[in-house]
Length: 380
Image (cartoon, rainbow, N blue to C red):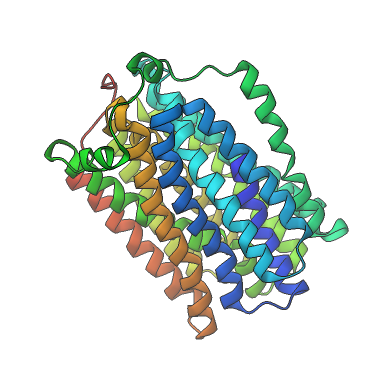
């Protein structure tokens, strides 16, 4: 929830900063992309660390890092300083997400593991809703700096976690890891796991590339389609509400229909919605297809977070999930930059969202042809 609040706030802050600091579309794209550069570094580094010192410790470290850096970014007066702090925010966010899903997947019985991890990820929607509410009620009246200061508050949650949260029972049972970081990276590319790793890397890249390209630009897209800032924030809030049923339906289906079916189906829904949203011009279709985009895309995210840790044994689970997420974050670097550069070149939204539609379909093909079903399998 706190992760999503932070990423969500950024999409609204970009739209507000563009007005305050007179940013070009390319500069706006860099704000979103530097966040993803940090996420790639964080997912890789903290994933390795979580397999060495435990899931709980890394979970708390990343929470404090992204909260404090986000709060400090409220004090910046230059784009460079803002970008440096957003890199640190991204490192914390990128590390926390795969480590949290690994911790939960290792703490739940096989028969309900997928459902519980998707429900965990559903709090991403709650965080986006909080971000949209803060943007709607706080930014127009008190400014974007106050909104960012609010995002520093989750750091206090780490104090509670330190006292109350148990570490992964599977990690503790496995004992102190013996393999080096290099050995772990080699293991995920051995014959047994190479196909799974390739599948995850393709899917993660395509999903994150399209998600950050589309969702970080949503408020700005609405402004560019002719709506003022306050109305744009309100419309994005309405679209965001559709994320919750997207997660809950995916959570219900994932133990019944399986991981591959849910992931492929929801990604196809995302691709179709992206194409229709990009070509919509009037308010009603923009809201309908924007809501469907939220519904399908976030349901797919939930399934992906449930599916990823199930591909690897305990010794390299956080490393494997973290590496896949890191590759995905590379896609997240290019998505916002691509939108910024295409808009600067005069390319229409229909073409831009058509590119994201194509990327998602590549992800679907990877799941269908390379993925293995892991429904209710015991973790190694």
